[in-house]
Structure formats: structure tokens, C-alpha cells
Image (tube, rainbow, N blue to C red; front, top):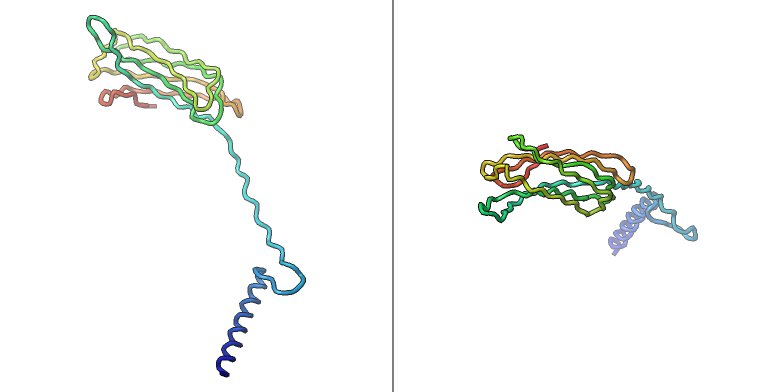
Length: 178
């Protein structure tokens, strides 16, 4: 019986030592009438600055187009697609795109002009390659050059986009090369 009492006293002393240590650290409060200890101040979270930027995507798609004529010679129609993948409005979109061929056939520059391109909005232009161009898709070679300027709404900063795409004969797609 004496051993049980001695053991209980030892456990109580050990617990009081732990309790005193926790009280010194400010994790628990021991006392009457003083109220709880104030919590330490929580450090302020760093301010997150969220700037919205425009993100203009440009793609050139190729589709085979058959003209109803005697020869039924297939032609290619090119589609230039510009889309605003960002969160801000793009204004004063101006520029051009044109087909460049190794045989120096003059293709017109197709004008790109749009006053406003809202977020998630698209701009589409198409061009039918001329009949003078050899359209045997196994031997066909051409590039498309795209250049335009635009204003980004948050700061009205002028930005420039320039790219060149090449027709890949194996996949029958336009591939961005610069």
C-alpha cells in the first residue's frame, strides 16, 4: 500500500513539472482570476499581388478544299486563329499574316484588325491557296508568317507578336518554327 501511495505522489510531481514547463512556455494557464494569457500575434500573410496579363494564342490550321470544276483539283484553305486565353481585354489588334512559298508566288498579306478581343474570344481569318500553287500534298512546301501589335488593358502597354509556321507534309499540319 505504501508503494502505491509513493507511486501516485511521484506521478503527481512529474505531472506538475510538465504542467509548470507548459505554463512557462505560455501554452497553458495556471492560476485563478487572472484570465487566459493573450495569444501571441499571428504574423501577417504576405500580400499577394495578382496582376492580370493578356495571353494571345495564334494557330494556323490547314484543310483540304475541293473546288467543283472539271479537274476537281484539291486546294488548301488556311485558317489563322487568334484567341485571347488571358484574363484581360486586348485592344487595337493590328497586323497581318501571309503565305510564303519557295517558288516566289506573290500571296497577299491578309490584314488582322480588331478593336477589342475579349477574354476567351477568338478572331478567325481564312485564305484559299491559289490554283497556281502546286498542291500535291506530298511535295507541297510553304510557310506562314504572322505579325501583329496589340495593347494590353491593365497598363495599356504595346506588345508585339511575331511567329512563323511551316507546313509539315507528314502530318498535314502547320508547325510553329519561330
